[in-house]
Image 1 (cartoon, helix red, strand yellow):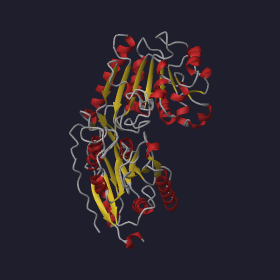
Image 2: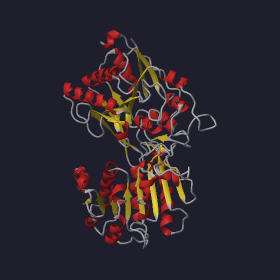
Image 3: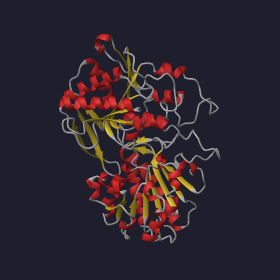
Image 4: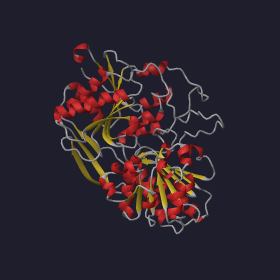
Length: 501
């Protein structure tokens, strides 16, 4: 049978692309840099600067630029950089090593994590596993909040390095990468390392804890487990600016990005229509319908009806069998992703082609699911396909959504977190979990679910919390789910017992 995909309700992508779109990010970063210069000079009122980004906005590029500008200021001789996880710190260390040289960039890492440092990063930085190994001449020191904020570490750093130009603190500026993933109680351990703090991050990824919850029994406005910027962003001493463009998605995906960042004044896409394409092999009718929809660049939702019952909402072999069937056809024939590269200001450059038989760069296909059991089943699919088709590394893998945040891939096959659910709960309807699933791909997004999402949302009761009976914007209640679904091209595959067998 033919699977017909209805067009998304939301289709407007705007007219600003390439350098015109990227210029908005440059202007926003320059405003943050101006605020940082004023803070260093003592002429500004801000001691915290927050550079908010959507997924794929190029925030790491902006952070590196701010580090360079800070070090050129006469009142800055040493910058500290921290984040929650090593996987966030390591690539940033490599980029700064390229910019400043290994003698000026020190990666401060736990001894048992030294072997995790990628070889290409290790060659670009100085590695220190103890405080005494940090070069006194290092201009930038990077470490996780657990490393830089360890008990007694502040004293050891001060005794070894002394004060920076400010005369009192170890660093003149502390940069926090992926700031909205760092809990307030972890930030408290590192805040005093510098008089000025810059937080850069994606506000749509998973926070340490849903900000709608507050287990703290004291001040209801305080939550030590909440992402730390939420405690400061409304203060007059905090400067906040948004990056208004994204580099990662296809232009056709932009309405979906806007659905997650609905309160932003503007959001543009550097990629223009046609900049990224997928060349498909010959496929059977059903597979051709699905992958042709994905190849348009538009977010695509495939709902499957007529399946056998799942073992549980998060243990669904019949649905994953459909995913495997679709992937087998795509990979058996081989496909090619084509992408336009851009220079640092968004001007189009040459075109790059990557074939599934010889992958390079970001993974070609990643299967994402929210629950561990579903990911284990998806990982088995990836292993079977790799073995059956002798696929090289970099073609396909599976991951939990939580582990894949901050990563990029060409095609995402996501299992919708509400697939097979009987109700909206705090886990399956979390804003960040669905946002991460939907914002990893540079070329195509295929979301797969059992049929019935609309019925589930129509029947879901409202929740208290706002005048409209729905909770805050980060909880993904019924109305927000419905708005996001409007950004997808949607089709239903009616399966019968013969097809399943």
